[in-house]
Image (tube, rainbow, N blue to C red; front, side, top):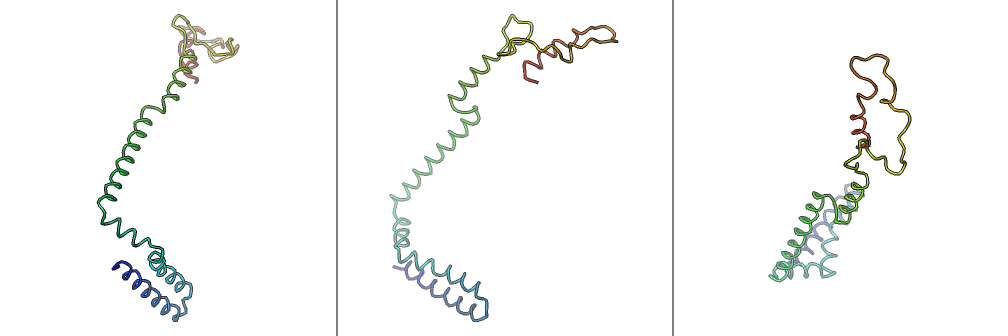
Amino acid sequence: MIAETVCSAVAAAGLGIAVVTAYRKRYLAAARIAAYSLVPLGLVMTGIVEWLADTAFSPTAWAGFAVLGGAWALFATTRAVERRRGGTRKERRAAARSARAEAVAPAASAPSLGQSGSRPASGPAAAPRATGGSGGSDDFSDIEAILKKHGI
């Protein structure tokens, strides 16, 4: 009952301020003030104010808000852990399968190239070196293999 009276008084005061503002030829501001002042009156007329007043003094409602907060905290925690681990279980399994498919065999001297099956004929390491101190074209083959393995 008190909340409805306060909201009605606020609406009446706001409409009074809107009239004074309109008298000063600031019609746009007056319309905006009138709109804001009618909101509490509308809330009283729809019954939302009474519902909020009943909820504010109800221990059951506060317990419900506590349960909702706990559920939100659990959800946020599980999402944070899931992101830290790298996705859902399906995503981790798919990543593990693709990593196994692209892995180099233990006995292989060069990385597997996937479905193509053949090495490219030209590359930076395949070019013959005209000058060089102690090496030939085989100097960087290990580095090249590592870079190809990682897709670089």
